[in-house]
Image (cartoon, rainbow, N blue to C red; front, side, top):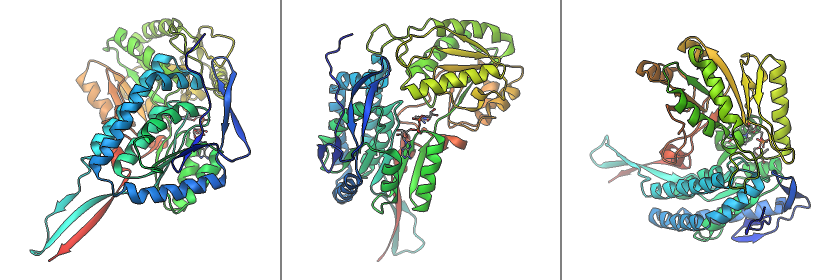
Length: 478
Ligand code: NAD
């Protein structure tokens, strides 16, 4: 397969300069569709990180004084550049992460939309006037940028999950050091480059490195005032502890194990069509991916049949092939973890329905695990891949109770025609986002975040902007 876009690993963006990291180690970047090496990534040394910290502090003194209108205008220029470079960025993303090109283009547009929304919102960072207790005094609440931010984004949606952090921080008047995922460095660097063209030196910096060393150095530095992380629960817990020790605010988005409740009065065909696309997008490597399907017993067999047919009809292949509907998973580590989870769940009593997958690369066949016991591994562990667990239920209360047994609480889905069922599920399902008769749980203008082990704090929406602001009370007496 030929592509007009060539791949090379990016440099680091430190103090306005793109340059190689000075750590003695390098990371090999691999194409998960064929396991061919793409390039080597240089990594940040401790000295590189200290330079980034000094630059972010210096730039914060400038950026916090920059008017909201100018911040908005600069970010919008960056957004225009991202849109103009979508083809280039999307090809890099497909090569290093595996998702089909159409999904990579859509992700790039979504990342641009996120920064655009935050940019506009910069103009609406209002404080408030509080009615005073005294005739000769005036009381105000002013919103201030919290300070330099350290952000850590993962490899599954590297553009969108970086844009959620960059957009909010920069629009609020914070500077930011982003550590992108080392597995998918070039697409994020290309997006960052577009934004950086419109920003003063040092406002936005990008590093790659040894993750525990980078997070330790950045979080313990007094320069950093806010931490934002998207990734797994164990790493999130570690960064929360580190942030607590240094009294830093942190936003955590730690994945999900999304329940879908399909009632007997649902439009089954519509539910299957929507869920088959949503479930297998990005080979299921999405924190909001529907993973635990609770289906009313009256329509369970029919749903299993229709959903199984839709899953096995998907065309797997290289993301660069226009016919491909599902690419590989992101790396060999994820493939092995998924095959192991499927085997352990079958051993615990579930039935497996899956088609074949290409031999080369990190492909995992779309897999339905049917009649899964509630205690089976895949009902507890986030699959993070093209795996769906299906379970019948008899009453809505039973379905909600089963859904709430997970330690996660990010996204949830409901398909029903009943207002009463909508009310009951809306009131009782333990999730941060709920889609009813649809699958849209994440848009730039609405908060996205979880409850329970899915983390705390929100990204996107006015709540996402608030995460980068402090409130200052000012009391004037004349
Ligand atoms: P991980 O948590 O180990 O890695 C996710 C990101 O965090 C990567 O970019 C990694 O470099 C970074 N990271 C790891 N250790 C770090 C540290 N000490 N400090 C700072 N950053 C660090 O996850 P993984 O092994 O890549 O994937 C395994 C699981 O993580 C998945 O099965 C899924 O459950 C979860 N995950 C969730 C999301 C999400 O969107 N919430 C994204 C990716 C992975």
